[in-house]
Image (cartoon, rainbow, N blue to C red; front, side, top):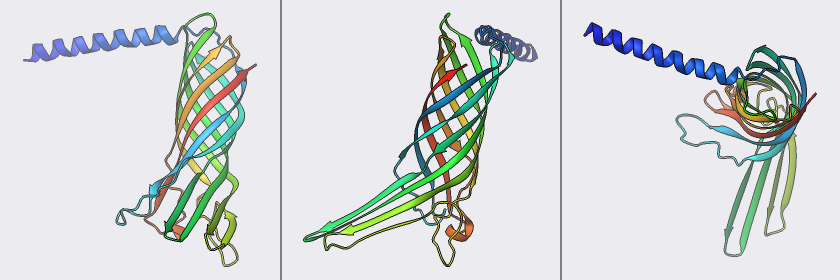
Length: 241
């Protein structure tokens, strides 16, 4: 029995070492080895995912909202095929919601749009491989930090009787006697997963998914059981100098 276990362990170690060597050889093919500076811009498709509380059974059922991001990154080589990529991005996120009701002779509709603006700092580990003289493939993963700069919520209501109303209020912070707020915390932290392609050493095309880990709900506004977090899918274009 011991011999079987030892043989199995040796086989597993051999397979693991072989796979690790193949991975090192693949991602070690990136030979640039110099600091690169780049600009990035692209499309965000974001949402807020959560629930009012574990006992309520009601989820925050929002629709996705389209926004954008723009900023810069620095590629810092650590070894062949491995870089650290910090960045600084101006990013618009949020969600939207729509309610409608109709019956014989009457209808009403309400819409809500949540538009926060963030300053985001991703710090990604970037694994890279030259698959040809003009194409470099990248796999990126790491944490991101975000700070809410501002943003508004806009609600509009109208019905078939001619009644209508439109209000705006801040996205971040808790409500006061003078002004309503959505009730979101300014600081966010999460994980980013992405992949992309660098063409001709300068032109970048990639995708990424940001998975927020911080409960953004302000307790005094939502209660201590409500939870919602940022989610964001992005398509990114860029240029490296």
